[in-house]
Amino acid sequence: MRGTILLSKSTLNNNYITMVSYKELGLVNTKEMFAKAIKGGYAVPAFNFNNMEQLQAIIKAAADEKSPVILQVSKGARNYANPILLRYMAQGAVDYAKSLGWEHPEIVLHLDHGDSFELCKDCIEHGFSSVMIDGSHLPYEENVALTKQVCDYAHQYDVTVEGELGVLAGVEDEVSSDHHTYTDPEEVIDFATRTGVDSLAISIGTSHGAYKFKPEQCTLDPKTGRLVPPPLAFDVLEAVQNKLPNLPIVLHGSSSVPQDEVDTINKFGGKLPDAIGIPEEELRKAAKMDVCKINIDSDSRLAMTAAVRQVLAEKPAEFDPRKYLGPARDNMEKLYKHKIVAVLGSAGKAE
Ligand code: G3H
Ligand code: 13P
Ligand code: ZN
Image 1: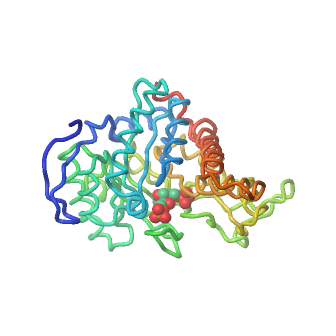
Image 2: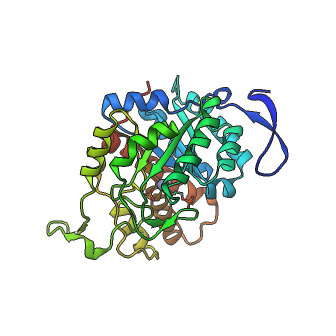
Image 3: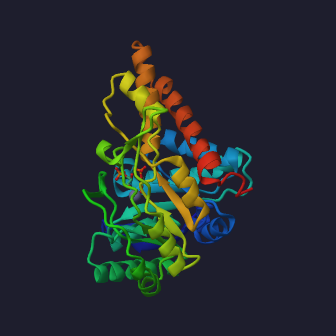
């Protein structure tokens, strides 16, 4: 059977599982991908997924645009979709990409916000090519120790590891904090050398979810009537990259919260008042610097929800899920392509 390499006792559920290497699945780790992105002045999109329509849309967009892509799975998504199914979906994604004419797909399967060594190990055993260990909420020395433990294990299998320094604000299923603390550039060299991380998520003012800023933090653009959020802390980003040039930097919480999707949701019965994201110009600027992975989840949720709400509102007699999940998938594909082509600059980088 393709992908079978050895039997190992799963740390999480104490069952013997068939360990699978990501290489057997046709996936890649982030090492070369990030080295090329830093050199080329673009960022690789990291799109979260937890269902088939999201995965189809991501792969179609990446294949059509020949963009390297990171398929990102949170702990909550893994619990939702089932780890075994997810593994086969990722394997299927590689073959699907090839069937779309993408000869050499560059696809990473990445654990987003791993919160324990055991979870990271389990993902590596299930074919992930990259894991994040998020110790950002821990005291510094504990973050170092946990991140090093994951790196030491992951690197044996050529799996790459993302760590995090600094705290992002925002609330998600498995990640939450009501305040942010910018990354301290003084800690970066020590953290990177002692842990061996392959990439580092930093905090410069982005945050998770669709409510990244309060209206009172923003100014009003008289031309559009839209709220403009305060700028990201590019001085912190610059200081980090000056400390450790060529360390791949990751930005979480980088959805832009497209106002047309928010308007559609609100028009068709939704209630998302004052949803505000990161302006695209700021992400473009970051992508040209040493930021080589940009995480986007909320925008895909918005694109999906907007399309579903619109179909169900306009066609109340419709009850075939394909009739509303199909348009949702199309809307997400359009969004992913826009990110790849017009924001991150990764189109054509994985021919
Ligand atoms: O940063 C977190 C991602 O958006 C995943 O969110 O934990 O709700 O799946 P989730
Ligand atoms: P958004 O909520 O801004 O999409 O951020 C997603 C993210 O950081 C996943 O790790
Ligand atoms: Zn995140």
